[in-house]
Image (cartoon, rainbow, N blue to C red; front, side, top):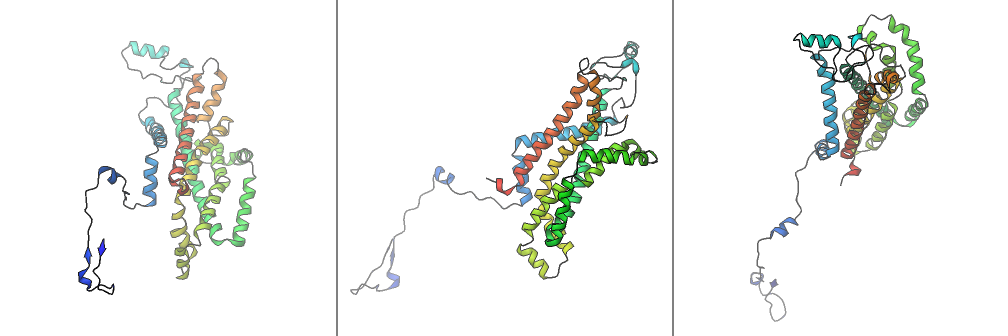
Length: 352
C-alpha cells in the first residue's frame, strides 16, 4: 500500500519520500498450482490432429485391424503352401482342419501336410488362400479407387472453386448430371462394351482382371469423384478470399501455383476424411458387383464372388459364406470407424 507524505497543502513533499508497504509473499500450495493455466508448446495442425486421433482408442483399434488384414493379404501368399487355383476334386467340401484321403495317406507315410485352415470349396481348392486373395482384391480396389477419386476430385473441385463465376456454374451442373447416373447400370454397359476389347488384349494383368473389374475402375473414375470435388470446392471458396491468397495474386502468382501451394495444402483435412470414407464404399461396391458376377474374372477370387458361390451349399456348408462375409464386415466396419475418427480429429468444429 502506498502512503505518500504530504505537506500542509496536501501535496507530497518529495517523490523519494513515498512509503511503499510490500505484502508478505508465501509459497503457492499444490491446490493453487493445479489451478494455474498450463500452457503447451504450439504444434502444427497435422500434428495436433494426429495426437487427437491417437487418443481415440476405437479408431486406433480399427487401424490395427486394417493393417493386420493388409499384412495377411499381401504377405501370406508368398509362403502359403496352397494357391487359389490349385484343385483337388477328392478334397471337395472339406470342413476346416480336415484332411482328404490322399493327405491322410501322405501323413501316414511320414510327410507333413499343412491343414486347410478354412476348409475347401466345391473344387477342392484351399478356402483360406482364396479368402486371402479376395481380401487383397478388395483392399486394392478400395485403395486405387480412392486414389482415382482424390486426383480427379481435387483437380476438378479446386479449379471450380478458385475461378468461380460461370466456370463454377458450368462445372457444378456437370457434377449434378453425373450424380443422376445409375452406377450399376453403367458398370453392366461398360462390361459388355469392353468385353471383346479385353479378350483381345495380350496384357496378363488386364486378362486376369477381366472386363468386370476394369469397368469398375472406369466407373469410379467417371462417377465417384463428384463427392470429393464438392468438398474441395467448398473449402476453396472459403480459402480464396484469405489475405495470403490475395497477396499471392498481387505479386503476380499464377492460378496453378496458388492452387498448388495454397489451396490444396489447406484442404488436406477434407481430402483425408473423404478418402477414408471412400475406401469402404468402394470395397462394398466391388463386393456387391462381384456377388452379381460383374467383378474379377474366374478363377481369381473376390470376397463378393466367394459369397455368391457359397449360396449353393449354404445349409450344408455355412462356413463357405461365413469367412468371406466376416472379412467384408470387418474391413468395411474398420474403415468406416477409422473415417469417423479422422473426421473427429481433423474437423476444427469438433475440437473441445
